[in-house]
Length: 110
Length: 115
Image (cartoon, rainbow over all chains, first blue to last red; front, side):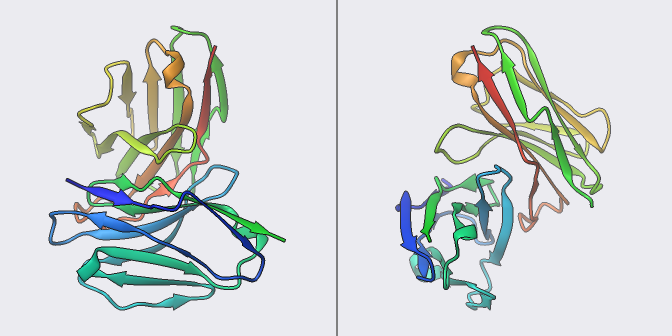
């Protein structure tokens, strides 16, 4: 079965604080891809990052960073120094089977 | 800018009255998807086209149909909308290679209200 779990439903932070979103996945595929998408209030899902199952290198891209650990089936995402514009729903997705997690509502308080 | 455009952005229909949502893309992507997203839930894949090949998800109700007359356009037809079909409908596109690596580009969605 393909499954993505995002346990936290709503996370509120004060502007400039860091926020980490947890994602745990289940798959029997040996090759798979994990994504993070952002859905602002306007509704359009925006691609943020992609990681394949063979590459566990963790990277930083601007204020975004991610921690992929295959051993624990986790693909966590961090926003550093959050801004009000980061307020959105963030979805983790296992795209081999087009399975999205339920999303994390992030609210950044000015 | 190349993009995925959905029309209408907001659709109100009556219970049982057919509705059609459209999606067009200028990305020349060969794969097009339709997702249903209910309030505070994850997008749920209804079906997708890989080129002209239609792929229906096993749990997609028969009430939902789709047409793809050409590469650029895809339509979602809801034959007899029920109250439970009120949702945001998202169209997405990607280049299809079968590897699962493809980034999906989403439209802004069509919000359907059923009265």
